[in-house]
Length: 364
Ligand code: F6R
Image (cartoon, rainbow, N blue to C red; front, side):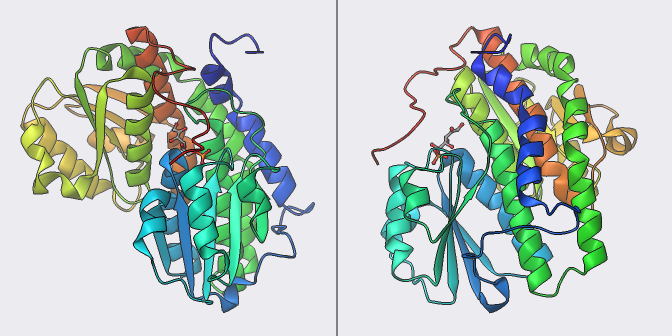
């Protein structure tokens, strides 16, 4: 049942405020000042290193989480795609917590990477959508993301629910490791509580995203740029777009632009820049200006303050509500999804069942 939407993907994009609210209800204490985790989860005070492993979109959730765990919880994090991790023979010691993220819980490479760690790591944790899946069953602790069934092959609501659970886990680790006092935690949790309402505002920009997407649909190649927490989001935006519209898209950390990809810039390749007005904004904007100086046509996804400061000369803008820096990845996932969705519609591709792809990748 598509619930009145044309595609499962549209339905699942629209469900995000609701399912994230469900995840928050599950993980926050009744008074809203604490985070509930299962007893089996180890205390992060004794953890030396966190290893995050996944494939595809779930991997981009892990890359985002690396920034959170390092910055907020001061915990060293390694992140890798499962197909590389499993064959690298990486040393995994008993001070390590190994964490696997998977919507289906059946991804062959992720499961193999989990099995590699099972007898080496101190503890194996998974963040999954399907609670009875192999990955959940074989983990010491399985944390559900509570996104509900995801039918569209391109992952949308599972991604933002993964981000929500990983962010809560980073806060829990920060609290246990003495880097977040009770007041700071309460502030962060109340900001998180207001996120579903804010996501509704982003969803309401669908028509603007559709307009931009009509132009993107004419391109053969599209570049996504972001810095810091927006770098994994740029990668997710590019993946979503190529999966369902079949347009070649690539993402770069904006600081990498001048190390090669700037040679690609011309007026025929649209560049999508994801940049809320955070501490790295000016850096990203100077990269964006280098693109525009070479005739590149920029779509800037930012907030009001970012638009005021850097909107001049930009071809298209999508304006997001203002949120605390650490919550921006969950919010900016929405325009990334909307752009991919409407570009695919403009191209007439099969949004829910893109060619060559399966929802659950149970062979390597
Ligand atoms: C992208 C997508 C895939 C999956 C990947 C991992 O939209 O759906 O990249 O994210 O195949 O799948 P799970 O999360 O089931 O392990």
